[in-house]
Length: 168
Image 1 (cartoon, rainbow, N blue to C red):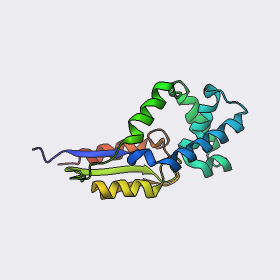
Image 2: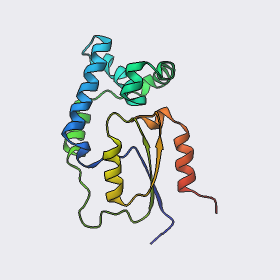
Image 3: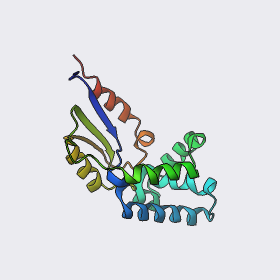
């Protein structure tokens, strides 16, 4: 067995995709985005919802990160994946039913998690419950960043690389 394997978790999903309240909060965020753009078209609403995902609800509502959000949205607009029926089905049928094994659920390799502290999808409590159950003790928390940490904080990739490939 290779003991040099390291695992990096980037905004990992908790069991059952966070459960019913996570679904409710997500639907409310989508409703807020729809009201802001005065549309129910997914092509119009989804980029607005991304603004909430990037830096959390408080930053979205206050406009605190408006310029950075606009820049990221413009840069990534072509990469925004609108929720197709297949994507929704995958979330409901797979992620929504996922649970860690009750026997031996601790990860066998050194693992670190990288999470945004204002993730509007999964709460810090949900993350920490999952990570404790999995035996993850190294957690890098990014203040002011949300669910799309891979977009809002590019430095996360350097930190993941440094964790996975430490100097010899």
